[in-house]
Amino acid sequence: MNYAKKTLIYFIGHTTIGIIALQFAFISNLSEGYREGVISGIAGGFIFTGILGIIVSIKLIKNPKKAQEVEIAKNEERTQLIRMKTHASIHTLMIYIISIGTLVTLLLGFREISLTLAAILIIQMIMYLGFASYYAKKY
Image (cartoon, rainbow, N blue to C red; front, side, top):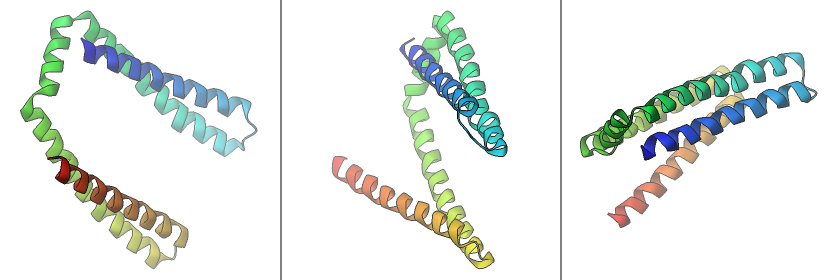
């Protein structure tokens, strides 16, 4: 039940961010294309996923047995191991994709994009090394 309440609060915050972005798009002096992008992309995405999350969280709160099953399944060792392996695989794959993207954009002459991708790649590697050394000392 505690998990369901936390997710409800999270999705309320998620919806609030979307509403704030929507108000910002209408109030601020933006170009028409940028305003449309903020409304359909940022505000629409946050509001849509937030409302869906609120609905699911409320259904979970109304069914305490299901909420308890979800919380137990979330904290189960097997689930945590699968989640950890999935995150590690996705991280490795994203490093390869960003590396290839950096090379391709550099070869195509998009200097700003390739520098941005290279900066993201460097930040990811620094964070990976930092967390790896932290967890190596902790465990």
